[in-house]
Amino acid sequence: MTLQDSAKGKVYFIGGGPGDPELLTLKAKRIIDSADVIIYADSLVHPSVCDSAKPDAHIIGSKTLTLDEISALMVEAASEGKLVARIQSGDPSIYGAVLEQMRLLEAAGVAYEIVPGVSAAFAAAAALKTEFTVPEVSQTVIFTRLEGRVAMPRGEKLRDLAAHGCTLVLFLSITRINGVVRELRAGGYAEDTPVAVVYRVGWHDEQVITGRLADIAPKVKRAGITLQALVLVGAAFDPDIRRINAAQTTASSHLYSSDYTHLYRRAVDFGKSAAAQRNANDDREG
Image (cartoon, rainbow, N blue to C red; front, side):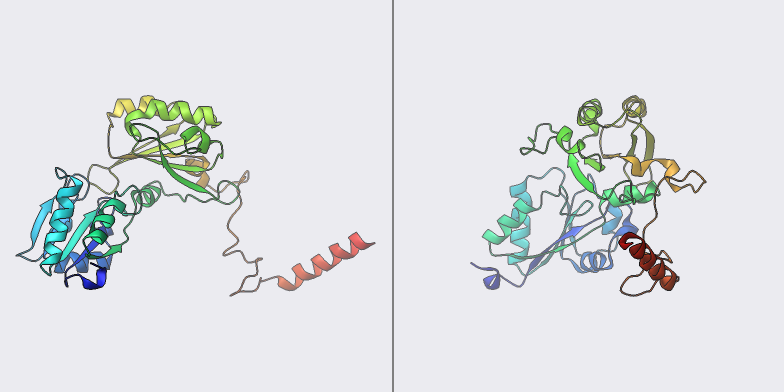
């Protein structure tokens, strides 16, 4: 059976965001509001995302269900012509365990669509009031995890990735924070590298712990955080990075710079800049 042969029912994999129900996209809310069946990750998704569901919607928490059980529910409902909202935490594309669900739906000939959501990584950057990509500091972001029961592919161990020295966002690793610190040190991060841990971002009990590689592990232990937290590593998370002072060492983006010409705007002093460039070329030729 192909997707075209399937019944009129459809499954939507919805990114439920990190916790705050107001971070749902308009499309996600529209689908949830009209869904006949809602299957949501009730250990990670705020239950209020289902508050606007239809009175007769069948709402199911999935934290105790296996992949086969979840898939069976989706296939059965879709085969009956129902609209199914499968709500994942964050964005389904990042550690969402969604690929295996899609495979089973395709095998059953069930149509599906993915609705992206706000990743906890982006909500954490917002909570820290920073950005991952800071000019002359870091222009690369790596989303990864510490190896545990799930083995990492060749070349993707944390110390290998740490060797790049860029912004790191670690999922599913907070229970092994001592191991995280060891791997980061082995990969070349200095003891004074800024590190932030954001627990349950977007929830009422959100907690942010900031420190350096040298002291973040004991801070996390004292806070008793053992789940649902991201570890963010790199100079982009230095709290001083937002301050403007005479000793500023980081550059600003060219995007809004008055002396930078791009497709939509010419530099304010473009003429002077061009003349200066010609003079510099003349000096080199002389």
